[in-house]
Length: 382
Image (tube, rainbow, N blue to C red; front, top):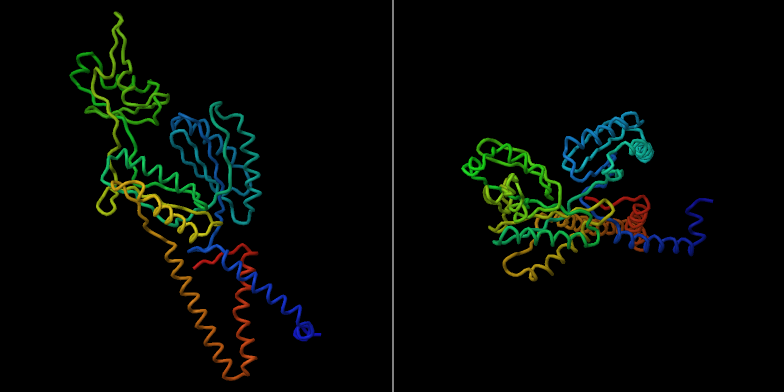
């Protein structure tokens, strides 16, 4: 007996199945992830090791190279790329084609566990995970003719607020100037106390300051300064003892020059509506819906813009969800007109009742496709 004959003989089961497709398809059509491009999982593994206060040279020698040597013999590893910054070693492991990333990840984890005992005692436990892509959704601008310190604090508060929104996994700040401590030393004072620029730089390297490091700049060159402890404010630095005399006298940094907290020299100038601005770009993972995240961000901006006062404003830019909405509207509009034209064409050649049921099969087929897309883990991408 053919499928068509079975369907005719069992109308209740067929109608029940049709309504299941309709209801399930409508539900999944609403809940499916909507994004600009198809989601993908990069064939990469990331490995991070934090060693607080370690300079890049020491970290590369005692951590990065040790891990790289151990990973060279793991099957499925095609390329290893490392980046070392102050206190952080970040390694990216690319998986060869034809190898399962999960299996390679387990092999890499075993090798990392094997060499973990040889890492420095003050290094934190290695963090190993499969790389995940992040996609930009919308940008939030914080702008105002205010003190840079105030603008920086507001931008950080807004970032924390955005990270609390559902679906937001990462917020990247652009245009924020890093804080610095400037030490302006008088050459005459150096000569008076019989100090050289290099000796002062060497002394500053040994101070117990909580700052990521920097460069002491002067007319005779630059001296790298590494600072690792607890005191970071300019007032604390001013009171630092540079030298003690045999008679008990002390020479402090404030005796040689002025110390001030400021921002690094501006490399790029961000402005919005003619005012200094900081840009916060909101990212999502493949599992999140771009339209829902954009709507939540816009609601957050509308709610908090007035709370900041007139001096600092919030706005949205680069809203990629707008393109998704436009293309979804175009797709739905084309589907409506296409269904209407097909129904008219069928009605011209078939009985109206037959034409209706044949035309009805088109949207039901699409609804069934939406249900299968959810089962396959696909998304509506345009």
